[in-house]
Image 1 (cartoon, helix red, strand yellow):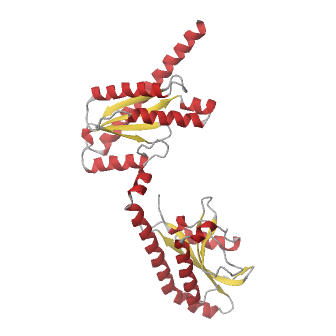
Image 2 (spheres, one colour):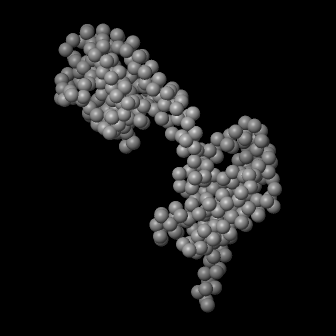
Image 3 (tube, one colour):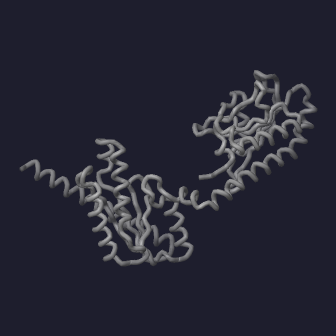
Length: 335
């Protein structure tokens, strides 16, 4: 997750929050200081539509826009340019329902990676073009202040979230199963690579058999139960020599901090027994395909090779499961 001011304020109901009120007062004061007709922030919503974010007009103004209101068509081309990272100083007068205006848009970037997260919009009445030029020149100082304010808000939110274990857990935890997720898996593997410790690890890949059929025939509610049951079966082993991740729909990874294959095979045997027990009343023949491989070195290439070998073994196991089930079905039909 990227907790910025632009994701905290997205709809009208957010106007009651302190973050919105602080930003609105700041933009209102900036608009009055520059003599701008309108001053506001804008961004994309989840549907990739350009929307108003925080308006610097008084809320009593008939032109006031609430968070989530769609940007008018005549402003979209310039605003889309700003959202690609380029400042826009319009050279043409735009005719709008509230009069003739000049517009300027400035991209606002996320300090952590430089990506554009929104834009600051400025509109002046086109009655006096020279005065407009002077105002735009003077606005640079105000704009720097606005960006600094937004950056400080983003930094404050980032610090609060990064330092809060609750949000760290949400970021790294799969919501359905409670296991570590793909983000956590990539981070942990990268840490092992940096520590040159991969040669001490063994990887096990696991993938549920028959999940698609269950989803198609009985619905995703039972499919989610199947996935959750697999997660519980994988996590029932109390030894501390492994970490479990859900990295995709029905895909799991188990990292063992040793090369003891006998221990891994015992873990797999017990896990499958637990899965059968957990699903006994709801899913006949519940099963999970697995493949294991040792990492023989500390480089990224060694790790990729180990994953490929585990993946190959897992799909061979899956193929064998379906072959046996076809033979069993054929015997049943004959009898």
